[in-house]
View 1 (cartoon, rainbow, N blue to C red):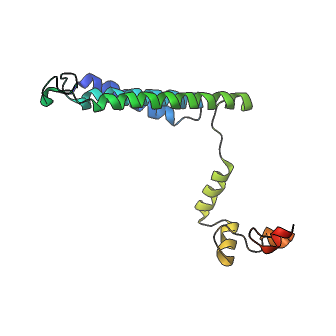
View 2 (cartoon, rainbow, N blue to C red):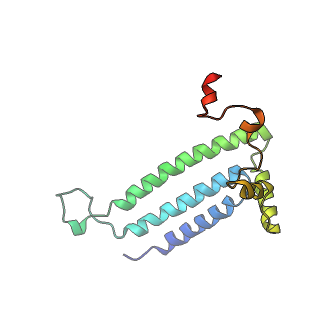
View 3 (tube, rainbow, N blue to C red):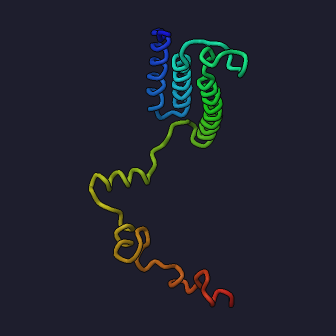
Length: 161
């Protein structure tokens, strides 16, 4: 079976448009990008499946004349995953619109700090303090159990309180 060029071009166009929309900040556009890319990939499955054959019922026809049912099962799985993703993104977009008045993805403050530290080729203060004192992420002298006088879990004094 020769691959259908029209199907390949339409699939490539849908995937390219989907990827372009995925790079936007609006959740609605991201949702449209996922839908376009998913449908573009689903258009590729008939090409992957190969030539059309007889239905895949065991015992009714020879094994070499049966159509491979795996691509069809993958398309059905893809449709279900896309539906769940669509429902999740619609919910997120609606909630973002209720809270912020728009559905754009905002910058994460922690990501901005990490990006700035990476550009400066430095580690955060908490990481440096943890490395000199004990484990990474553990600040030196910040043991809350020692400063507050509270008993540690498993401490024999814990049962007295």
